[in-house]
Length: 380
Picture 1 (spheres, rainbow, N blue to C red):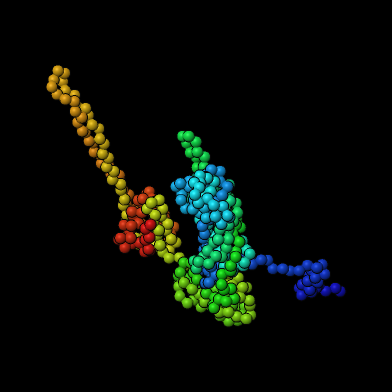
Picture 2: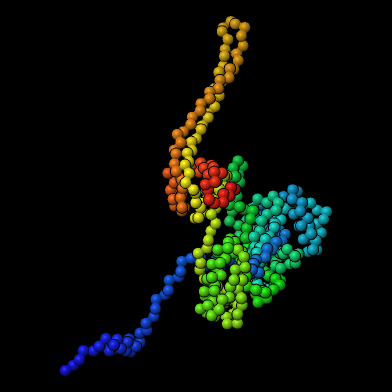
């Protein structure tokens, strides 16, 4: 009599079939925890760009360069350039319009080696109308210490243009500024390397004590599973210090920490731009319960002067008699109760009143004066 196989036998048989067929049980990809990466909200101290700038000349313009009579520094630069080439033009009056004096700027990335190339931006200094079609002559780029770190040269890429006729001019974009992709060659390296950093310090872009604590906790939770010890501590609201270890390379350590995610805390802040009527309300902004009413008062003054003419055959004179009409109109104001524990409730209350951006700005300022706005009000 045959006996039915038990569950254990069935499981063993199934595993044997799977192994025999060459299949492998692979877990699906783990879903990334929602949040913001540390590399997006903090930067490593000591790893930063360096700004470079220089003065140069752009040639090859189609009559759109500087007027040498108005831009004397362009004429002096051209004379100095030709003197170095063995051409004496000191007593000659130059009238070319195919050259322009420019400023060249660039950002030197951290730890860039000699021979690498970076992009440069070229902007006009004189009265040139367009740099389109021009070529930048070799221009040394210096840093804040006065040393030359790169040399820029090459044809410009200008996106803007200008077209002018006898009675009309069309300009699109900025024709007096352009870029040279990979236009600068690095000639000197910035002293120091990544290994020379005395310590690993992550500096927050928006300093906050809670966010710094969350970053420290996230790093320690990862290091406990990887190394069995804590390696991070929050120094203050701006920086988090990470200890080095021999278990992992320093570059890999920074890469692993940068991919950790947290939920950064944001301050309760309301930003108001009165020039454009823009109002930005933070997520943690709260308003204590208040009653708000807002009505517009419009006063219109109209001048309608009248001409008074004398009767026929009289000795009178024709005069202009002023006539002014003043009308005042006040709109009905809606009384609404504002108060919310979250951003959605606050926005819903403001929308119920039905206000314009300028009215919302006035109400927020009045609510702040009344002490009901539990946030920082920043007026730009």
